[in-house]
Image (cartoon, rainbow, N blue to C red; front, top):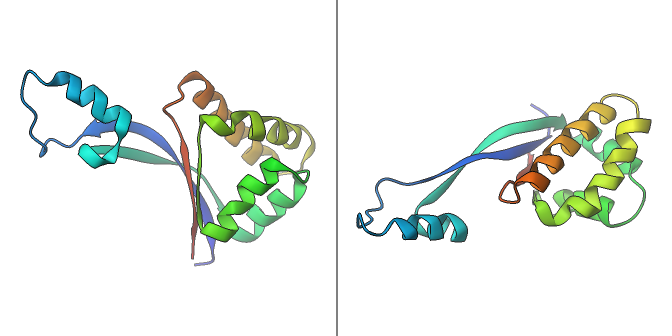
Amino acid sequence: MGEKVMFWMLGQKFVDDSVELAENSRQVVYYSLAIGHHVGVIDCLNVALECPLEEYQQWLALLEPGEAQRKMQGLLTFTEIVIDASHINTLAPAFAKLAKTSAEPWRSWSRQLLHHLNAMAQEPALYLMVRLLR
């Protein structure tokens, strides 16, 4: 198996049932969803995109130098990045260009990424986890 890049999208969150909450503490559940994993909130991630590392690097080379390319290249340095609603304004314009002008498979990958960025614009709690698998 060669190196590949996996994109996972948050599909849902749930509270771990093994963490007991008083019945009159429902607000704790909502607060827990906001503050995350420290109190038993588990994120369920679904595969959003998978690509070979070499083709991922070719995809990044198609981006104009700048913040979008820097963000996506962070994967090569850190082996994992998160893309959330705060990245929409940086990434969407760059990948919108590639969705129109690049060849396959980069065109469809760019369209898929744009789809997920649009979903984040509608629901800011969504995010993508991108990981380099070796």
